[in-house]
Image 1 (cartoon, one colour):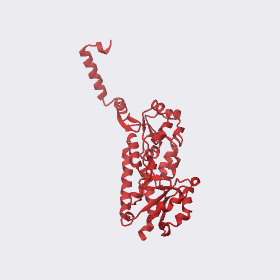
Image 2: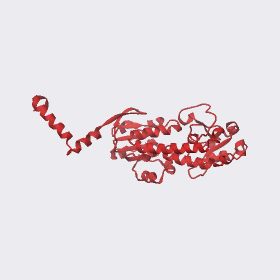
Image 3: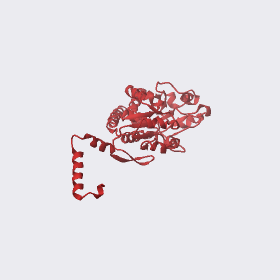
Image 4: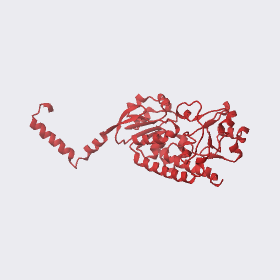
Length: 333
C-alpha cells in the first residue's frame, strides 16, 4: 500500500513514530546525517555555489593551499605549492609534505582522477581568474562542489585567504592568525611611527627581465610593499598604464629609467629570496651605475626585504620580522 493511500490515522501514527525515532538519544546516526546534509550558498569567482555548511573532506589548489593548511581545514588533497615552502612554519611544512598532491604547480597540471579518489565534499580552487580556463571546472563539479577563490591585487591576500578559510569551515584558527598578525603589525607601526611615515620609499621587485633590460618597480599595494605599508611605509608614485591584478600596482621600466623612477626616494627597498640571496633580476639593478648614483643609494638607505610574496597571515608574520630586521638602522639615523 502506498503512503499516499493510507488513512489519516495510520499516517499520523507513522509520522509520530518517525519523529520520535529521530529525536531518540539512541539514534545519533540520523542527527549526524542531518548535519552532513546541511548546505549554504557561497559567493565565489565562479558564481553562487551551494556547498556543505561544514565540509569534512576538502581539496585545495593554488593560493588556497597555504591558507587552508594554516587554518587547519580538513584537507584530503592539495596542489603542489613549492613557492610557498620557504615561508611555511615547521608544522605547516610537515603537513604540506604529508598531504596527497592532486595537482602540480600549474593549473593545467590538475589530476582529476586523483581528486576523485580523494572523495572530497568541497574543492577550493585558488588560482587567478584568467588561469581558471586551464581547469575543467565542469569535470570537477561532477566530483564535488567547486568554489574558485583566486587572487586579484597582491594586497588582497587578506580577504582572499579569509574567504578560502570561510568556505572550508575553518575560520576559528584563521581568526587567531589574523589577530596575531594585526597585533604585531600595530606594535611595529608604533615602533617606526616617528620614521617611516615621513619618508618616500621606492621598491625593486623580483621579476624584472635582464634579457630585455627591464626592472620591476612595485608601488603601494604590491607584493613587495603591502606588508611594509602596515608598518607605516609610504611608497610613492603609481603605475603609468595600470592593468589588472599585479599590473595595477607594478610596472617594468627600462634600466635607463632608474633615475626617473627612484630619484625622489629617501629610502629604497628590494625583494630578495627567502634565504637572503639576491635574484638575477634584482642583482642586475644593484650592479647598475645608475642605481649607484641614486641619492638614496649614496646615503646608504637601501634595504633588502625577505618573504615579500607572503599570502597568509602566518607567512606575513615572517615578513614583519624580516622588515623589522632590515629597517632597524632607520631608527638610529
